[in-house]
Amino acid sequence: MSRTLFRHDRIWTGDATSPWTHALLVEDGVVVAVGEQALESGAGATVVELPGALVMPGLHDAHIHTEWLSRDLSSVDLREARSLEETLELVRVHAETLPEGEWLHSGRWNHNRWRVPQQPDRHALDLVSGDRVAALSSVDGHTIWANSRALRLAGITRDTPDPVGGEIERDASGEPTGILRESAQELLEAIPHDESPLRPWLERCQEWLLSVGLTSITDIDGEDARAAYAEMHADGALRLRVTKCTRDGDLELALAEGRRSGQGDARFRVGPVKFFSDGALGSHTAHMSEPFLGHEGCGIAAMPYEVLLDRTLLAARSGLDVITHAIGDEANRLVLDSFEAVRAEGLDTLLRIEHAQHVRPVDVPRFRALDVVASMQPSHCTADLELADEIIGQRRLASYAWRTFLDAHVRVAFGSDAPVEDPNPFYGLHAAVTRQRPDGQPLGGWRPEERITLTEAVHAFTVVAHESVGRTDVGRLVPGQLADLVAVDRDLWALEQSSPADIRDTAVLQTWVGGDLAFERS
Image (tube, rainbow, N blue to C red):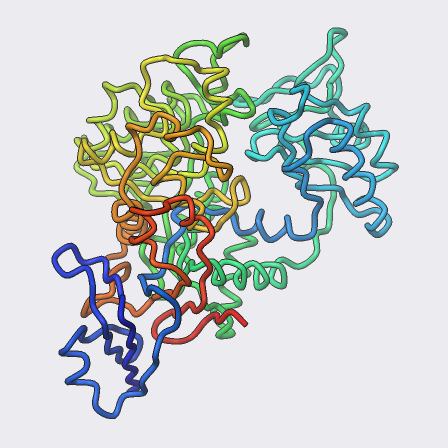
């Protein structure tokens, strides 16, 4: 038996009745005593004096794409580009570093931030991509900007019909522009392509996540990530706790293998199945009940409702929890309808709506009534606030409405949706508390009535994030809980009162998972 006595003047336990302590006794990775009882029972234990100004439970990212995030480490980063010209120059320079024949991928371009927010086309990308395939993802992952070679190899022509739940953008003459939205992105899968092994990139990504205080994640990506994580776990190289989702297209495989949510161990577990109801705000594909301001159409239903309902019920009846992407108010309504059908069958499946960004006020109580978790990403609010004002305006919607959900007694879990946003959870905590961008704008916060307290935000990144995938054994630093904790360089609760903007700059000094040191800042 391993016994460790952790000591620090300010340990935030996450327990509502006793939020602060100064000692934790951990046996075989589990907290067995706190405070004076820990000190009295800790004879013979290894003593660790934790560094920094504060110790708190390890944070859980409830929605992260680690395969995307890992692959992006080998790609060009276009997020900060402010024009088409700047974007193309970054692509050109990066292309010159690649081996012959390697794809240009990822990128995370965001035309909404360009000085002239125009959709790019294949002709511009052709100028800098040479004879290689280029398929650059938008920052939200819901649009691909492809070059002419990619379209040609995928067989996408003026005669190719739009797939269900997707759109091939076309110019005035009917030719594809290179912009592929939602399910139309999958047409590029027809191109033979060998990618480098994922595991080395995933291991680099793991180090990054541990360094920002994440001790566990719910991963949204596909079977390649599942296989890499399983291999890491078998080799003892998995230091994060990973709950691994199944994508919609892999549901039949999961059922054939007998997967059930919750299978696994404390380190690597089977999670929910993920469905899509609509697209994203930045791609103008979020499914709204009214058209976007200045744009025709109400977005895209990524899946016909009848199909969504059938898939949701299939998963729930088969023992798989369900999480469904919904950003627009119409998408949220339809997903709640599908979840109502699950509850009507008496199924106690864990149900989550991913993002829940724009919701009709009348639908907010339905989350509570149906016991649906609102799985949200605070950094989306501060990244999107100007765009939301521009294309949604002042409609009567609950938008990024953390306060509204909590006041309605809806469970709210937080994550990042990385690589759409940065995975650093302290960025998310800052956004939740201030509703301001890193530059402090807008003054007082965007729709400040939706701000929440730091304690509520941390609860969403710890206890509820874990509960949303069926875990009640981790998230607090109290007896019986797994000893996942982080030591940081500043006292967040003091900053909440004096300088909440500084929460964003928090540095993690140590990360412990199951009582073992997983990261230490040099």
